[in-house]
Amino acid sequence: MTRPGFSFSTRFKVRYPEIDAQRVVYNSRYLEYVDVAVTEFWPWTGIEELGPDWTEAEFHVRHTEIDYHKPFVMNDEIEAFVRVERVGGTSLTERFELCHAITGDLHCTILMTIVHVDLGTGRPKPITGAVRSRLEQLVGA
Image (cartoon, rainbow, N blue to C red; front, side, top):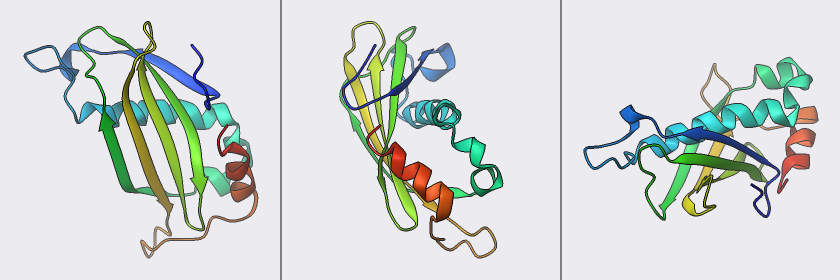
């Protein structure tokens, strides 16, 4: 399925350990779904071609906004759409839309800001050079 404003998506099914007694997905699982989606997204972008500048870069989650529109239930097939929304000086914001893969219904919208950090100090570190250029190319793609 296509979704306006998104070039990438990946699909997966709701599994038994992700649901409660009413067969509804636990709220916390939506962040795990984002993790699955973004793990597929980065290789799709080709950014790993930058080598250690990207593969050794460290990003930590700073802020997440979750808007639950409609719950997923057991055996639903999810299509997770991902895009880079914004690149800042030391951070970037990603947008995730989790939809029912068959009906196309939007079930959850997530905005996540991640910060590029220096592992030694734990402090924010500027996003520069080829990594910045590649990330900027991805904005809105």
